[in-house]
Every structure is written in C-alpha cells, then in structure tokens.
Image (tube, rainbow, N blue to C red):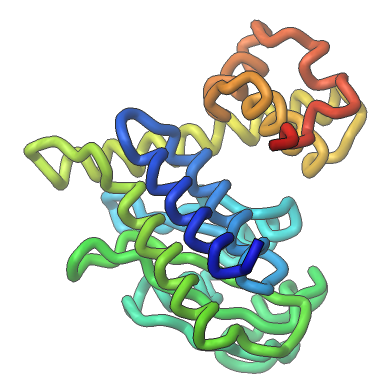
Length: 248
C-alpha cells in the first residue's frame, strides 16, 4: 500500500474513534505509535497541561521514550516544554551533549540513543494545551511532506483531548485532561504488576497489556484497572502472543 494511502487510512481510523465515547490515553498512545510508523522517526510522545498549567506525560511510543520525557519534566528543559511554553514548533534540532538549548536534556537523550528531535504544540484555538515530541536516532530531518502529516497528528491529538466537551468548555477540557492523567497512573501501576508477575520488563508488560485490550476489544485503561484490582485473568498476561496485534 502506498505511503500516502497509509497516512490517510491512519488519520481516518483515528478520527473515527472520536465518534462517541473513547479512551483518550489509548488514542494518544496509538497516535504516538503511528508517528513512528509513518514519519520515519524513532520515537514519539504526547504531553498535556493541567488546569494549573503544569505539563504531564500522557502517552509515549516506547519505554525509553517515556523515561526520557519524564526526565525532561524533571530537568525542566527540552523540546516539548519549549513547544508548549512558546506555542511554536521546535524545528529539527541535532542534539549535542551539554550544549544549548537543553544541556542536561541533550545528555540524557543521547544516552538513550537519540540524535535529533523536533516538537509541535497542541493548540485549541489560541491556547496551547500540550505538545507532541518527535525523536530520531539519526540526524536527517523529516521531509516537508512528513512535517505536514506530523502537524495533522498534532491537531488530531488536540482535538481528541477536548472532544465531547460540555457547554462549559473550560470545565470539560479539564475533565478530559484529568481523566487522561489519572488513567496514565493506573496504566503505570498495571505495567509494574504485570512485569513482576510475568517476569518481563516494563516495555514487555505494556505490550501485553495493550495487546490483551486490542485482542478483546477492551479499553486500555479498563484492562489496566482490572490488572490493578486483581480482577483480570492472570493468564491474560502470560500468553506468548498477548502483546501482538491481531492480523487483519
């Protein structure tokens, strides 16, 4: 299938999930994964802001990406934070250890195997509500066509966060953000439980968690809560193919 068709199909599939009720974390996690699949990058992540203006990690394409983005928040420097605070895109930056604009973050990113980065703000009209991080193990920037697609993914991420807002738009947006952040906590707890009981690392635990949700047509957060509550069948995460996506 031609790349253009794959991009259109991905955008249509994700847009379709916005109809009716949907799982924000699952959608944004899938969006991060699609960025990696279609944009020629190595990792992607999504951060969103709370009502107080603090920015938090909601979705990432890999465990290494999640850890690096958490470091970005702790160090209070990095491309995602710049995109969020300025409301402007951070164009392709080749990372150099200890150099500006993010001396500490650059060291951590290079140690994680990344060589370049860019970031896009998530906007609701004139308000920035988060940012999309795009990392690469190489130094070649995205093509102009890929940059356009990345902007479309960023816009879709923003729409997913504020979808189903109530008449009180501000209140509804806060509810969506709070739900996404709380769901992320539950997912991290579930990953720890599965990793310990199945004897796998956190990345493998998440693959099993998400694979089980997909195979059984369940929400990722719903399966995570069941794992934390102890109501999920333990065999669910011990299956060898639990983390594989069903073949189409």
